[in-house]
Image (cartoon, rainbow, N blue to C red; front, side, top):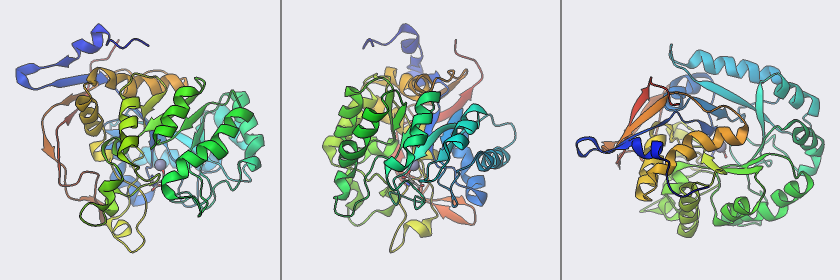
Length: 369
Ligand code: NCD
Ligand code: ZN
């Protein structure tokens, strides 16, 4: 891929009256937690107002493991959207040791499941029913490889003796490289990557391996979790790593490499579940998602690469059409709310109380050709 931006990309970064504006094709979020019930109702539009489509994680309690459950969940998401909002949730199946390949295949052929999600058992929030050993799902992976259905992986081993900051790198070595060797044609998205090791793995692998990168892993390193005291709202899984890893992620995201694309991993939790003796993992970045990505790409001098990362690389990887329409952002600073009301509680969003240099202006009706 050429490093120089196309002329249409350049035209759409304008500097009207000294305020930088950016118009990009409508983006998608290739990894989000929309939750259920009252939490779904009060948070879904933070995602739906910015993104045309989103890959919806299946880690509800109980998890989404059947076609019927995914259809019902998709209907609950549609019902929770404000009227007139155009947003397409792309559903995923939660892989368990016992999931039937036929159920996965039926869901894919009926266009209910877009992909399957592999959570190693106990790796993260609501993963107790996850896969205990990849060998147990070999038949499913074989089916997915045959039908061209993407596998989305939470790439961390869960052994207690492995240091938490090493769990992604060890996962590559012990699990992912074996899956890739055993199923060379399987489409795999290495989700929410956090390390230089993951960047290198993706760069060195064949084109059927991609990765999503979150806003928070581009903006914080592990020091942020302990800055002046413990910061539960910056705790997520995989946990943020050293600065060298953050820099590698920023380089990958802004490189123009089509294998890296946007996935927020926005994961709302009630404030009481975060500010607790055993706080939940998950960062709610949906209210500031595109603003964060624009800030990072701007800081890296790579605004011309944002559209590919946010709106093209994901659909191209999944084999889905690009969205029409555009969204607009402007380099005007705003202050993120301290808390947002949600269900009968509150959620503290990513960057709460701080100033973000970019503002999301909304969707434009004019379509991109
Ligand atoms: C996610 C959640 O809360 O559901 N938490 C997180 O820290 N990212 C689960 C996940 O994606 O690991
Ligand atoms: Zn997630």
